[in-house]
Image (cartoon, rainbow, N blue to C red; front, side):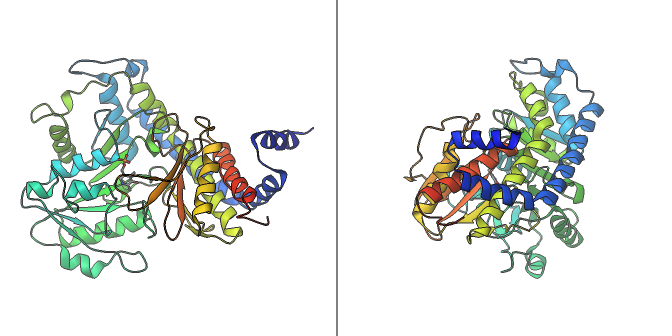
Length: 431
Ligand SMILES: *Cc1c(COP(=O)(O)O)cnc(C)c1O
């Protein structure tokens, strides 16, 4: 038996039928050029990260356990230099005390806005969890409760920035504008770093002192540049996504201008203490090693997303982004058109997981959602969405959103298994 036959046999043992496997092989062959480009991007970003670690003179002492106040926590302070090097910013705050992406964003906003200031979103409605942070949906401790004004400029119907309305919206009180790079779970396209750069340049021409913040979640290492390379004063993200590389067990980051990072540090710990306290409690090795792996992990996730787009597009389903489009984040949406389709897809993703593969996800009423939702995840880090994961609200248009995959081989297995389930249920009839 040659290696391909052995692989085929192992796929059969995991439950993938020869028809599904063959279909996948054909799609994969057609993607060779795309995948080569992604490998090049990973190489570029890998070198960027290694260079940043060398510049900051990372050594074994960086991985030591620090407890208590965390004064002179060398590993933590050096990691923040590494992040600042990667993002080409003056400074960074990267901590396990920042619990997730939402927290990193809430921290950055509350640290840099004062009562009477206006926060302006120029990319339409922000990510769901930020609605309570801002006070779009009333919540205890929201920015609105502290007298921060919120305004938003919706995107044009084609998903691009509405420059005329942005110009009109920027006023005397506008202190900080926010741009969300990834579409998250909306249907608009995600922004390229260049598009973000154009929007920032436009805003700065109107009001040079306005602070430009980018919600960078799901976007890190997808392109050769980051928003901080095109004028963003602050970039913010989650270590349970791309830059954690699947290894960071918790965390968030903010990278940007020194004075603005100091505001964040004073808000995270306390006025006067700032970055000086906050022990890293033994997570540093996973933060460093996760960042080191992140460019190749993101490449695997991107290949998975592109593979899925092409598999399901070929079978006649609507996919966003489509099979050929440039990628600006790692999220893939597939409209399956029926509840059975969404459920079968998610059950396939679950069945392919290294952890909890034997459980069968079912739709459930989740807090914050207006329909039942099915979620599939078998992750090493709870809730991690850089690991292969999928979820689908059980409502029109019956779309699933999926992302991640720590390796391309795993992402491929997950997608083949989703197809297997659709095929077994007779939802996909012919391959
Ligand atoms: C995931 C995400 C967030 C929130 O991050 P969490 O780590 O889930 O809190 C914010 N914005 C965008 C665009 C995201 O994708």
